[in-house]
Length: 327
Length: 277
Image (cartoon, rainbow over all chains, first blue to last red; front, side):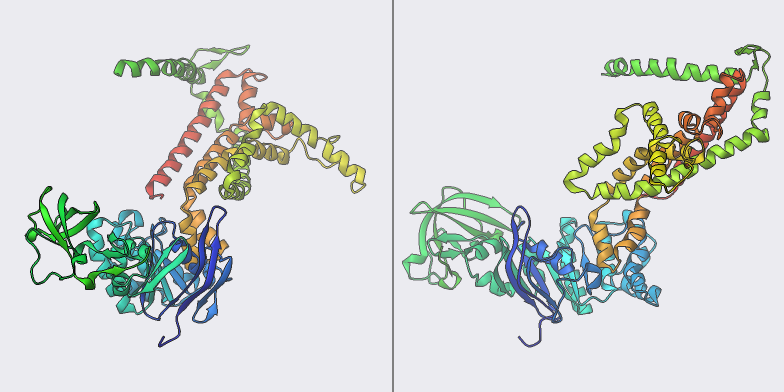
Protein backbone atom coordinates (compact mmCIF):
# COMPACT_ATOMS: atom_id res chain seq x y z
CA UNK A 1 0.00 0.00 0.00
CA UNK A 2 1.28 3.40 -1.02
CA UNK A 3 0.25 5.32 2.09
CA UNK A 4 -0.69 4.41 5.63
CA UNK A 5 -4.34 3.48 5.92
CA UNK A 6 -6.56 6.16 7.46
CA UNK A 7 -8.64 3.55 9.26
CA UNK A 8 -7.66 0.08 10.21
CA UNK A 9 -9.64 -2.64 11.96
CA UNK A 10 -7.40 -5.29 13.49
CA UNK A 11 -8.98 -8.59 14.50
CA UNK A 12 -12.10 -6.88 15.75
CA UNK A 13 -14.69 -9.08 17.46
CA UNK A 14 -18.04 -8.14 18.91
CA UNK A 15 -20.58 -10.54 20.40
CA UNK A 16 -24.11 -9.76 21.49
CA UNK A 17 -25.99 -11.99 23.94
CA UNK A 18 -27.78 -13.70 21.06
CA UNK A 19 -25.01 -14.02 18.50
CA UNK A 20 -21.49 -13.12 17.45
CA UNK A 21 -22.02 -10.07 15.24
CA UNK A 22 -18.43 -9.44 14.17
CA UNK A 23 -15.90 -12.25 14.20
CA UNK A 24 -12.21 -11.39 13.84
CA UNK A 25 -12.62 -8.73 11.16
CA UNK A 26 -9.58 -6.93 9.80
CA UNK A 27 -9.69 -4.28 7.11
CA UNK A 28 -7.84 -1.16 6.05
CA UNK A 29 -9.23 1.98 4.40
CA UNK A 30 -7.02 4.01 2.11
CA UNK A 31 -7.00 7.76 2.46
CA UNK A 32 -9.62 9.40 0.26
CA UNK A 33 -11.39 6.28 -0.93
CA UNK A 34 -15.07 5.49 -0.93
CA UNK A 35 -15.23 2.10 0.71
CA UNK A 36 -18.37 -0.02 0.89
CA UNK A 37 -19.09 -2.58 3.60
CA UNK A 38 -21.41 -4.93 1.76
CA UNK A 39 -23.32 -7.93 2.99
CA UNK A 40 -26.69 -9.44 3.75
CA UNK A 41 -28.65 -8.26 6.79
CA UNK A 42 -27.13 -9.57 10.00
CA UNK A 43 -23.66 -9.92 8.49
CA UNK A 44 -22.16 -7.47 11.01
CA UNK A 45 -21.60 -4.52 8.68
CA UNK A 46 -23.65 -2.08 10.73
CA UNK A 47 -21.99 -3.28 13.94
CA UNK A 48 -18.61 -2.59 12.34
CA UNK A 49 -19.72 0.92 11.43
CA UNK A 50 -21.10 1.53 14.92
CA UNK A 51 -17.82 0.41 16.48
CA UNK A 52 -15.91 2.87 14.30
CA UNK A 53 -18.37 5.62 15.32
CA UNK A 54 -18.03 4.64 18.98
CA UNK A 55 -21.61 3.53 19.64
CA UNK A 56 -20.42 -0.01 20.32
CA UNK A 57 -17.19 -1.14 21.95
CA UNK A 58 -15.36 -4.11 20.46
CA UNK A 59 -14.88 -7.15 22.70
CA UNK A 60 -11.44 -7.68 21.20
CA UNK A 61 -9.21 -6.11 18.59
CA UNK A 62 -8.14 -2.60 17.71
CA UNK A 63 -9.62 0.23 15.67
CA UNK A 64 -6.89 2.54 14.43
CA UNK A 65 -7.68 6.01 13.10
CA UNK A 66 -4.55 7.61 11.66
CA UNK A 67 -2.59 4.98 13.57
CA UNK A 68 -4.14 5.69 16.98
CA UNK A 69 -6.35 3.13 18.69
CA UNK A 70 -9.72 4.83 19.11
CA UNK A 71 -11.59 1.77 20.38
CA UNK A 72 -11.74 3.03 24.00
CA UNK A 73 -12.82 6.57 23.02
CA UNK A 74 -16.38 7.87 23.36
CA UNK A 75 -18.23 8.95 20.20
CA UNK A 76 -17.76 12.63 21.11
CA UNK A 77 -14.02 12.14 21.37
CA UNK A 78 -13.48 10.84 17.81
CA UNK A 79 -13.06 12.87 14.67
CA UNK A 80 -15.39 10.68 12.66
CA UNK A 81 -18.94 11.56 11.79
CA UNK A 82 -21.97 9.49 10.92
CA UNK A 83 -24.82 9.97 8.46
CA UNK A 84 -27.55 7.84 9.99
CA UNK A 85 -29.88 5.62 8.03
CA UNK A 86 -32.86 7.65 9.32
CA UNK A 87 -30.67 10.80 9.06
CA UNK A 88 -31.42 11.51 12.76
CA UNK A 89 -31.81 15.23 12.16
CA UNK A 90 -32.87 17.06 15.32
CA UNK A 91 -36.58 17.68 14.77
CA UNK A 92 -36.73 20.74 17.01
CA UNK A 93 -33.96 22.56 15.14
CA UNK A 94 -34.02 24.02 11.64
CA UNK A 95 -31.48 23.01 9.03
CA UNK A 96 -29.09 25.80 9.92
CA UNK A 97 -29.05 24.89 13.62
CA UNK A 98 -28.76 21.20 12.82
CA UNK A 99 -25.66 21.87 10.74
CA UNK A 100 -24.31 24.28 13.35
CA UNK A 101 -24.80 21.76 16.19
CA UNK A 102 -21.36 20.14 15.96
CA UNK A 103 -19.53 23.42 15.37
CA UNK A 104 -21.11 24.91 18.49
CA UNK A 105 -20.04 21.87 20.54
CA UNK A 106 -16.48 22.61 19.49
CA UNK A 107 -16.87 26.28 20.33
CA UNK A 108 -15.85 27.22 16.77
CA UNK A 109 -15.78 30.77 15.55
CA UNK A 110 -17.39 31.68 12.25
CA UNK A 111 -20.21 29.21 12.69
CA UNK A 112 -22.46 31.04 10.23
CA UNK A 113 -19.85 31.13 7.46
CA UNK A 114 -19.00 27.44 7.81
CA UNK A 115 -22.64 26.39 7.98
CA UNK A 116 -23.46 28.41 4.87
CA UNK A 117 -20.51 26.88 3.03
CA UNK A 118 -21.65 23.39 3.98
CA UNK A 119 -25.22 24.15 2.91
CA UNK A 120 -23.92 25.49 -0.38
CA UNK A 121 -21.94 22.30 -0.89
CA UNK A 122 -25.14 20.26 -0.71
CA UNK A 123 -27.24 22.98 -2.39
CA UNK A 124 -29.48 23.52 0.58
CA UNK A 125 -28.92 27.24 1.27
CA UNK A 126 -32.52 28.03 0.38
CA UNK A 127 -33.84 25.60 3.01
CA UNK A 128 -31.75 26.80 5.95
CA UNK A 129 -34.83 27.90 7.91
CA UNK A 130 -36.79 24.70 7.36
CA UNK A 131 -37.46 22.15 10.07
CA UNK A 132 -36.70 18.51 9.13
CA UNK A 133 -40.42 17.66 9.07
CA UNK A 134 -40.91 20.13 6.22
CA UNK A 135 -38.31 18.55 3.94
CA UNK A 136 -38.23 15.72 1.44
CA UNK A 137 -36.13 12.60 1.97
CA UNK A 138 -33.44 13.80 -0.41
CA UNK A 139 -33.21 17.18 1.31
CA UNK A 140 -32.97 15.55 4.72
CA UNK A 141 -30.15 13.38 3.48
CA UNK A 142 -28.26 16.39 2.17
CA UNK A 143 -28.84 18.21 5.48
CA UNK A 144 -27.43 15.21 7.35
CA UNK A 145 -24.42 15.17 5.01
CA UNK A 146 -23.83 18.88 5.57
CA UNK A 147 -24.14 18.43 9.34
CA UNK A 148 -21.36 15.85 9.27
CA UNK A 149 -19.14 17.34 6.57
CA UNK A 150 -19.05 20.78 8.17
CA UNK A 151 -16.93 19.23 10.94
CA UNK A 152 -14.31 18.12 8.39
CA UNK A 153 -14.06 14.63 9.90
CA UNK A 154 -11.18 12.30 9.13
CA UNK A 155 -13.74 9.76 8.11
CA UNK A 156 -17.41 9.94 7.17
CA UNK A 157 -19.55 6.93 8.01
CA UNK A 158 -22.74 6.35 6.04
CA UNK A 159 -25.27 3.80 7.23
CA UNK A 160 -27.38 2.62 4.28
CA UNK A 161 -27.38 6.17 2.89
CA UNK A 162 -29.84 5.51 0.08
CA UNK A 163 -32.28 3.09 1.69
CA UNK A 164 -34.64 5.79 2.97
CA UNK A 165 -34.94 7.44 -0.45
CA UNK A 166 -37.54 6.85 -3.14
CA UNK A 167 -36.26 4.18 -5.55
CA UNK A 168 -36.33 6.54 -8.53
CA UNK A 169 -34.16 9.02 -6.64
CA UNK A 170 -31.52 6.48 -5.63
CA UNK A 171 -29.86 6.22 -9.06
CA UNK A 172 -29.37 9.98 -9.17
CA UNK A 173 -28.15 10.27 -5.57
CA UNK A 174 -25.55 7.52 -6.12
CA UNK A 175 -23.80 9.75 -8.62
CA UNK A 176 -24.23 12.88 -6.52
CA UNK A 177 -22.84 11.22 -3.42
CA UNK A 178 -19.83 9.91 -5.29
CA UNK A 179 -19.18 13.33 -6.85
CA UNK A 180 -19.49 14.96 -3.42
CA UNK A 181 -16.95 12.53 -1.99
CA UNK A 182 -14.50 13.37 -4.78
CA UNK A 183 -14.98 17.08 -4.21
CA UNK A 184 -14.45 17.10 -0.42
CA UNK A 185 -11.75 14.42 -0.54
CA UNK A 186 -12.88 12.89 2.76
CA UNK A 187 -12.70 9.11 3.17
CA UNK A 188 -16.19 7.59 3.12
CA UNK A 189 -17.09 4.27 4.72
CA UNK A 190 -20.53 3.24 3.54
CA UNK A 191 -22.64 0.34 4.72
CA UNK A 192 -25.04 -1.20 2.24
CA UNK A 193 -26.83 -4.45 1.56
CA UNK A 194 -27.39 -3.51 -2.09
CA UNK A 195 -24.67 -4.96 -4.30
CA UNK A 196 -25.54 -2.67 -7.20
CA UNK A 197 -25.10 0.34 -4.95
CA UNK A 198 -21.72 -0.93 -3.77
CA UNK A 199 -20.56 -1.79 -7.29
CA UNK A 200 -21.61 1.54 -8.77
CA UNK A 201 -20.30 3.80 -6.01
CA UNK A 202 -17.37 2.26 -4.19
CA UNK A 203 -13.68 2.41 -5.00
CA UNK A 204 -13.30 -0.78 -3.01
CA UNK A 205 -15.70 -3.19 -1.41
CA UNK A 206 -15.40 -5.39 1.68
CA UNK A 207 -17.91 -8.20 1.54
CA UNK A 208 -19.00 -9.50 4.93
CA UNK A 209 -20.95 -12.63 5.76
CA UNK A 210 -21.84 -13.90 9.22
CA UNK A 211 -19.46 -11.50 10.87
CA UNK A 212 -16.47 -12.47 8.73
CA UNK A 213 -14.74 -10.87 5.76
CA UNK A 214 -15.38 -12.89 2.59
CA UNK A 215 -13.44 -10.72 0.17
CA UNK A 216 -11.92 -7.27 -0.26
CA UNK A 217 -11.35 -5.69 -3.64
CA UNK A 218 -12.40 -3.26 -6.32
CA UNK A 219 -15.89 -3.72 -7.75
CA UNK A 220 -14.37 -5.36 -10.84
CA UNK A 221 -12.28 -7.80 -8.80
CA UNK A 222 -15.16 -8.74 -6.58
CA UNK A 223 -17.60 -9.21 -9.43
CA UNK A 224 -15.30 -10.82 -12.00
CA UNK A 225 -12.98 -12.77 -9.71
CA UNK A 226 -15.06 -13.78 -6.73
CA UNK A 227 -13.04 -15.65 -4.12
CA UNK A 228 -15.82 -18.06 -3.32
CA UNK A 229 -19.36 -19.07 -4.12
CA UNK A 230 -20.87 -16.76 -1.52
CA UNK A 231 -19.23 -13.70 -3.10
CA UNK A 232 -20.15 -14.80 -6.61
CA UNK A 233 -23.76 -15.40 -5.62
CA UNK A 234 -24.17 -12.27 -3.53
CA UNK A 235 -23.02 -9.93 -6.28
CA UNK A 236 -25.27 -11.40 -8.95
CA UNK A 237 -27.09 -14.47 -10.17
CA UNK A 238 -24.93 -17.45 -11.18
CA UNK A 239 -25.80 -20.69 -13.03
CA UNK A 240 -23.84 -23.45 -11.32
CA UNK A 241 -22.73 -26.57 -13.19
CA UNK A 242 -20.68 -28.45 -10.62
CA UNK A 243 -17.54 -26.36 -10.13
CA UNK A 244 -18.27 -24.02 -12.97
CA UNK A 245 -20.40 -20.92 -12.68
CA UNK A 246 -21.72 -18.73 -15.46
CA UNK A 247 -23.53 -15.45 -15.00
CA UNK A 248 -26.82 -15.01 -16.90
CA UNK A 249 -25.44 -12.07 -18.89
CA UNK A 250 -22.59 -14.32 -20.17
CA UNK A 251 -24.95 -17.12 -21.09
CA UNK A 252 -25.85 -17.16 -24.78
CA UNK A 253 -28.96 -18.63 -26.33
CA UNK A 254 -29.67 -19.41 -30.00
CA UNK A 255 -32.29 -21.32 -31.92
CA UNK A 256 -29.72 -22.51 -34.47
CA UNK A 257 -26.49 -24.30 -33.62
CA UNK A 258 -23.93 -21.70 -32.60
CA UNK A 259 -21.58 -20.70 -35.39
CA UNK A 260 -17.94 -19.74 -35.35
CA UNK A 261 -18.31 -17.57 -32.23
CA UNK A 262 -19.19 -20.60 -30.11
CA UNK A 263 -16.43 -22.66 -28.56
CA UNK A 264 -15.67 -25.96 -30.17
CA UNK A 265 -15.44 -27.65 -26.80
CA UNK A 266 -18.69 -29.52 -26.20
CA UNK A 267 -18.57 -28.99 -22.46
CA UNK A 268 -19.55 -25.35 -22.98
CA UNK A 269 -22.47 -25.90 -25.30
CA UNK A 270 -25.68 -27.62 -24.36
CA UNK A 271 -29.04 -28.31 -25.96
CA UNK A 272 -32.02 -27.25 -23.92
CA UNK A 273 -35.72 -26.45 -23.83
CA UNK A 274 -37.07 -23.05 -22.76
CA UNK A 275 -39.22 -23.40 -19.62
CA UNK A 276 -39.79 -19.79 -18.68
CA UNK A 277 -39.34 -16.24 -19.99
CA UNK A 278 -39.68 -13.17 -17.78
CA UNK A 279 -39.86 -9.61 -19.12
CA UNK A 280 -37.78 -7.18 -17.02
CA UNK A 281 -38.10 -4.02 -19.09
CA UNK A 282 -34.64 -3.68 -20.56
CA UNK A 283 -34.19 -7.42 -21.07
CA UNK A 284 -35.71 -10.87 -20.68
CA UNK A 285 -34.64 -13.57 -18.26
CA UNK A 286 -35.06 -16.82 -20.14
CA UNK A 287 -34.75 -20.12 -18.29
CA UNK A 288 -33.77 -23.24 -20.25
CA UNK A 289 -33.60 -26.81 -19.01
CA UNK A 290 -30.60 -28.71 -20.31
CA UNK A 291 -30.17 -32.46 -20.79
CA UNK A 292 -29.43 -33.43 -17.16
CA UNK A 293 -32.46 -31.50 -15.90
CA UNK A 294 -30.57 -28.46 -14.67
CA UNK A 295 -32.04 -25.00 -15.15
CA UNK A 296 -29.91 -22.32 -16.75
CA UNK A 297 -30.88 -18.67 -16.86
CA UNK A 298 -29.81 -16.36 -19.65
CA UNK A 299 -30.18 -12.61 -19.83
CA UNK A 300 -31.42 -11.79 -23.32
CA UNK A 301 -31.53 -8.20 -24.61
CA UNK A 302 -35.03 -7.14 -25.63
CA UNK A 303 -34.00 -6.74 -29.26
CA UNK A 304 -32.80 -10.34 -29.45
CA UNK A 305 -35.70 -11.97 -27.69
CA UNK A 306 -37.72 -14.58 -29.54
CA UNK A 307 -37.71 -17.38 -27.02
CA UNK A 308 -40.93 -18.93 -25.80
CA UNK A 309 -41.54 -21.77 -23.38
CA UNK A 310 -41.18 -25.07 -25.22
CA UNK A 311 -38.63 -23.79 -27.77
CA UNK A 312 -35.61 -26.03 -28.39
CA UNK A 313 -32.47 -23.92 -27.99
CA UNK A 314 -28.69 -24.09 -27.85
CA UNK A 315 -27.12 -22.84 -24.60
CA UNK A 316 -23.45 -21.84 -24.67
CA UNK A 317 -20.83 -19.45 -23.29
CA UNK A 318 -17.21 -18.35 -23.67
CA UNK A 319 -14.60 -20.09 -21.50
CA UNK A 320 -13.36 -16.68 -20.32
CA UNK A 321 -16.72 -16.00 -18.67
CA UNK A 322 -16.57 -19.07 -16.48
CA UNK A 323 -16.08 -18.83 -12.73
CA UNK A 324 -14.18 -21.84 -11.37
CA UNK A 325 -15.09 -22.19 -7.73
CA UNK A 326 -15.25 -25.36 -5.62
CA UNK A 327 -18.29 -25.90 -3.46
CA UNK B 1 -73.82 0.56 11.39
CA UNK B 2 -74.89 4.01 12.42
CA UNK B 3 -77.56 2.66 14.77
CA UNK B 4 -75.04 0.32 16.34
CA UNK B 5 -72.71 3.22 17.01
CA UNK B 6 -75.57 5.13 18.62
CA UNK B 7 -76.42 2.12 20.72
CA UNK B 8 -72.94 1.91 22.21
CA UNK B 9 -72.48 5.65 22.62
CA UNK B 10 -75.83 6.21 24.30
CA UNK B 11 -74.92 4.96 27.81
CA UNK B 12 -71.88 7.20 28.15
CA UNK B 13 -73.79 10.13 26.68
CA UNK B 14 -76.58 9.65 29.19
CA UNK B 15 -74.13 9.32 32.07
CA UNK B 16 -72.19 12.42 31.05
CA UNK B 17 -75.38 14.39 30.64
CA UNK B 18 -77.05 13.26 33.86
CA UNK B 19 -74.02 13.16 36.15
CA UNK B 20 -71.82 15.88 34.73
CA UNK B 21 -73.66 18.46 32.69
CA UNK B 22 -76.82 18.73 34.83
CA UNK B 23 -74.94 19.08 38.15
CA UNK B 24 -72.72 21.66 36.51
CA UNK B 25 -75.79 23.62 35.42
CA UNK B 26 -77.17 23.35 38.94
CA UNK B 27 -73.90 24.71 40.36
CA UNK B 28 -73.99 27.52 37.81
CA UNK B 29 -77.52 28.42 38.86
CA UNK B 30 -76.66 28.30 42.57
CA UNK B 31 -73.77 30.65 41.97
CA UNK B 32 -76.08 33.47 40.90
CA UNK B 33 -78.67 33.01 43.66
CA UNK B 34 -78.60 34.29 47.25
CA UNK B 35 -77.75 32.23 50.32
CA UNK B 36 -80.49 30.63 52.37
CA UNK B 37 -80.63 31.08 56.12
CA UNK B 38 -79.72 27.44 56.87
CA UNK B 39 -77.79 26.58 53.71
CA UNK B 40 -79.40 26.08 50.35
CA UNK B 41 -80.28 28.94 48.02
CA UNK B 42 -83.07 31.48 47.63
CA UNK B 43 -83.94 34.18 45.11
CA UNK B 44 -83.18 36.84 44.06
CA UNK B 45 -80.56 36.41 41.36
CA UNK B 46 -77.34 38.30 42.04
CA UNK B 47 -73.76 38.66 40.84
CA UNK B 48 -72.64 39.44 44.36
CA UNK B 49 -71.05 35.99 44.87
CA UNK B 50 -68.63 36.56 42.00
CA UNK B 51 -67.77 40.05 43.19
CA UNK B 52 -66.85 38.66 46.61
CA UNK B 53 -64.17 36.41 45.10
CA UNK B 54 -62.10 39.52 44.48
CA UNK B 55 -62.04 40.35 48.17
CA UNK B 56 -58.32 40.44 49.13
CA UNK B 57 -58.98 37.75 51.72
CA UNK B 58 -59.99 35.26 49.03
CA UNK B 59 -57.50 36.48 46.44
CA UNK B 60 -54.80 35.70 48.96
CA UNK B 61 -56.06 32.12 49.30
CA UNK B 62 -56.23 31.88 45.52
CA UNK B 63 -52.68 33.13 45.20
CA UNK B 64 -51.51 30.65 47.85
CA UNK B 65 -53.19 27.82 45.98
CA UNK B 66 -51.41 28.77 42.76
CA UNK B 67 -48.14 29.05 44.58
CA UNK B 68 -48.44 25.68 46.36
CA UNK B 69 -49.67 23.95 43.18
CA UNK B 70 -46.92 25.54 41.10
CA UNK B 71 -44.18 24.58 43.52
CA UNK B 72 -45.54 21.02 43.80
CA UNK B 73 -45.59 20.76 39.99
CA UNK B 74 -42.02 21.99 39.74
CA UNK B 75 -40.83 19.49 42.37
CA UNK B 76 -42.72 16.70 40.57
CA UNK B 77 -40.97 17.69 37.34
CA UNK B 78 -37.52 17.77 38.96
CA UNK B 79 -38.11 14.39 40.63
CA UNK B 80 -40.09 12.85 37.76
CA UNK B 81 -37.83 13.62 34.83
CA UNK B 82 -34.80 11.59 35.97
CA UNK B 83 -37.13 8.78 37.01
CA UNK B 84 -38.89 8.75 33.63
CA UNK B 85 -35.53 8.89 31.87
CA UNK B 86 -34.27 5.96 33.94
CA UNK B 87 -37.39 3.89 33.22
CA UNK B 88 -37.26 4.62 29.50
CA UNK B 89 -33.75 3.19 29.45
CA UNK B 90 -34.42 0.27 31.81
CA UNK B 91 -34.76 -2.20 28.93
CA UNK B 92 -36.56 -5.36 29.92
CA UNK B 93 -37.34 -4.03 33.41
CA UNK B 94 -39.45 -1.16 32.05
CA UNK B 95 -42.72 -2.96 32.73
CA UNK B 96 -41.77 -3.66 36.33
CA UNK B 97 -40.67 -0.06 36.91
CA UNK B 98 -43.95 1.30 35.53
CA UNK B 99 -45.86 -1.10 37.76
CA UNK B 100 -43.93 0.21 40.76
CA UNK B 101 -44.73 3.82 39.82
CA UNK B 102 -48.41 2.93 39.72
CA UNK B 103 -48.31 0.70 42.77
CA UNK B 104 -49.60 3.41 45.19
CA UNK B 105 -52.87 3.56 43.19
CA UNK B 106 -53.71 0.14 44.55
CA UNK B 107 -54.71 1.62 47.89
CA UNK B 108 -56.93 4.59 48.65
CA UNK B 109 -55.41 8.04 48.59
CA UNK B 110 -57.05 8.75 51.95
CA UNK B 111 -55.32 5.79 53.60
CA UNK B 112 -51.99 6.79 52.10
CA UNK B 113 -52.45 10.34 53.37
CA UNK B 114 -53.09 9.02 56.86
CA UNK B 115 -50.00 6.86 56.56
CA UNK B 116 -47.96 9.98 55.83
CA UNK B 117 -49.50 11.69 58.84
CA UNK B 118 -48.46 8.80 61.05
CA UNK B 119 -44.93 9.14 59.73
CA UNK B 120 -44.71 12.92 60.07
CA UNK B 121 -46.50 13.80 63.28
CA UNK B 122 -44.65 14.77 66.43
CA UNK B 123 -44.91 11.26 67.85
CA UNK B 124 -44.50 9.67 64.41
CA UNK B 125 -41.86 7.29 63.19
CA UNK B 126 -39.48 9.94 61.86
CA UNK B 127 -39.56 12.19 64.91
CA UNK B 128 -39.42 9.25 67.33
CA UNK B 129 -36.33 7.94 65.56
CA UNK B 130 -34.67 11.36 65.45
CA UNK B 131 -35.37 11.96 69.13
CA UNK B 132 -34.06 8.53 70.04
CA UNK B 133 -30.71 9.30 68.44
CA UNK B 134 -30.40 12.28 70.74
CA UNK B 135 -29.66 14.65 67.86
CA UNK B 136 -32.85 16.60 68.61
CA UNK B 137 -34.53 17.58 71.83
CA UNK B 138 -37.80 18.74 70.30
CA UNK B 139 -39.62 17.03 67.44
CA UNK B 140 -39.31 18.58 63.98
CA UNK B 141 -42.48 20.34 62.82
CA UNK B 142 -43.13 18.04 59.88
CA UNK B 143 -46.92 18.04 59.84
CA UNK B 144 -49.61 20.73 59.65
CA UNK B 145 -47.65 23.22 57.60
CA UNK B 146 -46.90 24.09 53.95
CA UNK B 147 -44.07 21.59 53.83
CA UNK B 148 -46.47 18.78 54.68
CA UNK B 149 -49.01 19.95 52.10
CA UNK B 150 -46.45 20.14 49.31
CA UNK B 151 -44.95 16.79 50.34
CA UNK B 152 -48.40 15.22 50.22
CA UNK B 153 -49.23 16.75 46.85
CA UNK B 154 -45.89 15.78 45.30
CA UNK B 155 -46.27 12.27 46.65
CA UNK B 156 -49.82 11.96 45.38
CA UNK B 157 -49.34 13.38 41.90
CA UNK B 158 -45.80 12.33 40.99
CA UNK B 159 -47.05 9.37 38.89
CA UNK B 160 -49.08 11.79 36.76
CA UNK B 161 -45.84 13.56 35.88
CA UNK B 162 -43.79 10.41 35.35
CA UNK B 163 -46.17 8.65 32.97
CA UNK B 164 -46.47 11.34 30.24
CA UNK B 165 -42.74 12.03 30.49
CA UNK B 166 -42.01 8.34 30.11
CA UNK B 167 -44.30 8.08 27.08
CA UNK B 168 -42.50 11.03 25.52
CA UNK B 169 -39.00 9.74 26.27
CA UNK B 170 -39.82 6.25 25.14
CA UNK B 171 -40.84 7.53 21.69
CA UNK B 172 -37.60 9.47 21.30
CA UNK B 173 -35.45 8.01 18.52
CA UNK B 174 -32.23 6.71 20.16
CA UNK B 175 -30.40 7.68 16.96
CA UNK B 176 -30.91 11.35 17.89
CA UNK B 177 -28.81 10.94 21.03
CA UNK B 178 -26.21 8.99 19.06
CA UNK B 179 -26.17 11.81 16.53
CA UNK B 180 -25.63 14.34 19.30
CA UNK B 181 -22.71 12.31 20.69
CA UNK B 182 -21.38 11.83 17.17
CA UNK B 183 -21.37 15.62 16.70
CA UNK B 184 -19.32 16.08 19.86
CA UNK B 185 -21.97 16.57 22.54
CA UNK B 186 -21.20 15.08 25.92
CA UNK B 187 -24.09 13.28 27.66
CA UNK B 188 -25.20 16.29 29.74
CA UNK B 189 -25.07 18.60 26.73
CA UNK B 190 -27.08 16.10 24.71
CA UNK B 191 -29.63 15.98 27.52
CA UNK B 192 -29.96 19.77 27.56
CA UNK B 193 -29.84 20.36 23.81
CA UNK B 194 -31.72 17.35 22.48
CA UNK B 195 -33.63 15.32 25.08
CA UNK B 196 -35.13 18.18 27.07
CA UNK B 197 -36.32 20.26 24.10
CA UNK B 198 -37.88 17.18 22.53
CA UNK B 199 -39.65 16.42 25.83
CA UNK B 200 -41.63 19.65 25.83
CA UNK B 201 -44.93 17.91 25.00
CA UNK B 202 -44.41 15.46 27.88
CA UNK B 203 -43.35 18.20 30.28
CA UNK B 204 -46.41 20.25 29.34
CA UNK B 205 -48.80 17.29 29.64
CA UNK B 206 -47.31 16.17 32.95
CA UNK B 207 -47.38 19.69 34.38
CA UNK B 208 -51.04 20.12 33.44
CA UNK B 209 -51.93 16.75 34.93
CA UNK B 210 -50.20 17.68 38.21
CA UNK B 211 -50.93 21.40 38.45
CA UNK B 212 -54.69 21.27 37.94
CA UNK B 213 -55.52 18.66 40.58
CA UNK B 214 -53.05 20.32 42.98
CA UNK B 215 -54.78 23.65 42.48
CA UNK B 216 -58.15 22.25 43.50
CA UNK B 217 -56.80 19.76 46.02
CA UNK B 218 -58.91 19.41 49.13
CA UNK B 219 -57.93 16.25 50.97
CA UNK B 220 -54.19 16.85 51.31
CA UNK B 221 -54.27 20.52 52.43
CA UNK B 222 -57.11 19.75 54.81
CA UNK B 223 -55.51 16.72 56.46
CA UNK B 224 -51.80 17.47 56.21
CA UNK B 225 -52.09 21.26 56.35
CA UNK B 226 -54.21 20.96 59.43
CA UNK B 227 -56.59 23.70 58.31
CA UNK B 228 -53.93 26.33 58.91
CA UNK B 229 -52.69 26.65 55.35
CA UNK B 230 -55.98 26.95 53.53
CA UNK B 231 -56.32 26.42 49.75
CA UNK B 232 -59.26 26.96 47.39
CA UNK B 233 -60.48 23.39 47.71
CA UNK B 234 -60.86 23.78 51.47
CA UNK B 235 -62.44 27.20 51.04
CA UNK B 236 -65.10 25.78 48.70
CA UNK B 237 -65.77 22.92 51.07
CA UNK B 238 -66.14 25.35 53.98
CA UNK B 239 -68.80 27.32 52.12
CA UNK B 240 -70.98 24.25 51.76
CA UNK B 241 -70.49 23.08 55.36
CA UNK B 242 -69.58 25.43 58.19
CA UNK B 243 -70.22 28.72 56.40
CA UNK B 244 -73.49 27.51 54.83
CA UNK B 245 -72.97 29.83 51.90
CA UNK B 246 -73.77 27.58 48.95
CA UNK B 247 -73.94 30.37 46.35
CA UNK B 248 -70.46 31.63 47.20
CA UNK B 249 -69.13 28.06 47.20
CA UNK B 250 -70.68 27.50 43.78
CA UNK B 251 -69.24 30.76 42.44
CA UNK B 252 -65.78 29.82 43.74
CA UNK B 253 -65.99 26.38 42.10
CA UNK B 254 -66.96 27.86 38.75
CA UNK B 255 -64.29 30.53 39.00
CA UNK B 256 -61.65 27.87 39.66
CA UNK B 257 -62.96 25.85 36.72
CA UNK B 258 -62.82 28.89 34.44
CA UNK B 259 -59.25 29.59 35.52
CA UNK B 260 -58.25 25.98 34.87
CA UNK B 261 -59.86 25.97 31.43
CA UNK B 262 -58.15 29.26 30.64
CA UNK B 263 -54.77 27.79 31.56
CA UNK B 264 -55.45 24.68 29.48
CA UNK B 265 -56.40 26.87 26.54
CA UNK B 266 -53.16 28.84 26.84
CA UNK B 267 -51.14 25.63 27.11
CA UNK B 268 -52.78 24.08 24.05
CA UNK B 269 -52.25 27.29 22.08
CA UNK B 270 -48.59 27.33 22.99
CA UNK B 271 -48.00 23.74 22.04
CA UNK B 272 -49.86 23.91 18.72
CA UNK B 273 -48.27 27.23 17.77
CA UNK B 274 -44.92 25.53 17.25
CA UNK B 275 -44.38 22.20 15.57
CA UNK B 276 -43.56 19.66 18.25
CA UNK B 277 -41.89 16.67 16.66
